Image (cartoon, rainbow, N blue to C red; front, side, top):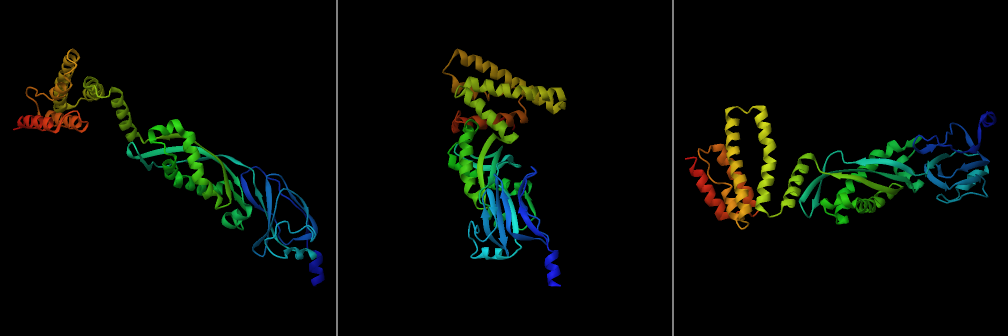
Length: 348
């Protein structure tokens, strides 16, 4: 009976793998009930390596080439002592092929804004995205850490793990690059280099070699972008009070127009009327300042001058404006307190 079982056995003469281009990283040679014949041929093509696993342990790793599996040619790399003695008769072992070609155009990005430290803003929430490429650098490490005994392991199976590693290391990469947020857009190559330096040892832990990574865009969430736009606008006008008031007026006009077009009711009309009076004052003050360049401080205080029949909403809006001027250092605390007291008397 044992002789008949031996006769019915199938023997493998050629072991090879032709990739199908479907993103396969690891492929297990189908053994079924077959055994490898002593003297069988193993073909490992360029961009591949083959791993033999015997009794659950990696026995040998084969680089590209053609091999005759005999006791004279094995082992190529000795992970298990004397495992080549198995070739004295047909034997059964698991054979895994790994693709070592470069996997290009892999996408990464921040699904949600991430918070980073920044020397200009203190803390910034930003979004970023780009692409990267990688290849299997250590097939034995990849087999033991990632793919294991699965018949097929693909790029798609690994995608989530690698994206997570990228996101996990972005903050450290920005910190190590020393590039402030406002300069990141102009220094994306430097940022990418810092990110690659952070990621390479993390990828190596699972047998992956990071070949390249790019940063294609760095941006702020919409609400923070508006704040940045305003800061940039203020940076353009500098400390010129007249230009500052012109900038503020330009920012306010679209809001007034929007309120008028939507019909704000009696309260909205009152607010619009108060704002219109204040706007007229601002324009007059700017004209006066143009005639007298030394009147910057006077113009700042005059911006909050009392208006005939001023309403509660106008008082609060004026106080908020004065608060902004004090925060920016344009008004002193004493000037702010004096004008605040004067306006609050209008509410009594």
